[in-house]
Image (cartoon, rainbow, N blue to C red; front, side, top):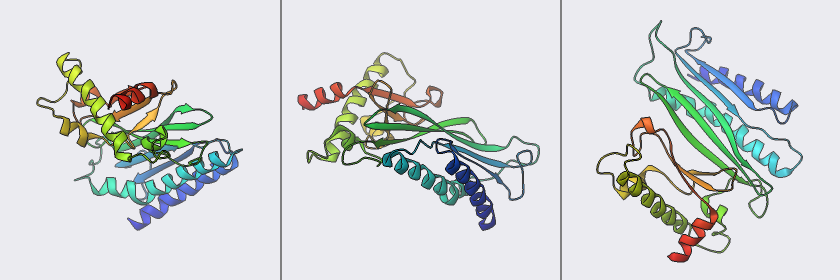
Amino acid sequence: MKRFLCIAAALLLISAGASAQTAAEPLRGEVFYPQGSAAASASFVFRYTLPQFPTEQLQQQAVNRYFADYATELIGSVIPETLSGLDSLPAAGEPEYYVDLDYRVTANTADTLSVLLVSQEFLGNTLVESWKSAVFALSGIYAGRPITLSQAMGLEQEGGDPDYASELVYGLVWQIVQYEVGAMEKAYFPDLTEADVRRAFAPQQDFYFDEDGNFVFFIQAGAIAGEVEGVLTYPFSMAELLSAIRQK
């Protein structure tokens, strides 16, 4: 495994070096397992593409470092942990297992940058999509840093309770879930409870901005509804969130 990680790290350095030459070129890497295998013979392949941005501003440089560090984390821990969690790898002639990690920039304004990391995973059963978000402030006291929901709403700057924003979102999402259950709009699990929804996501991290400036909260596929529904999303405008605060 150590040698596997050394090979992977070399791939990372090649990719990062290319990115340094052209600042907006994404970071790309491809790791094959077992060691010494290639695309045609590997039992497991992890491919990733992570964003990089023009570096005229210090905030963008900080964002680029964040994703470079994340690429290192993929090599050092995420890929080995994924492999260690598998009971077995496919035999020769069977379809390879793989993880393809890509990204979407969902919002890029003067004040915020929102990136959604989308992972397509085939680990022996079905193809599963999962999301991870990274929202950055480009102005203000958090400029260049990833921010939480409370920070994005300005509640921490006002000395508010960080849990307050989470509780607010849990309540709003539960209202939508109840409506959709009653309207039979989605295949939610039978006897789904608010506690189940609360365990399924963390509002402080599991959100991104869309191009209209809405906060979009997401729950992974298969967490509270059948995987056929995919990742579930719940968008709210800032005005809706502020209105809910006033009603508290």
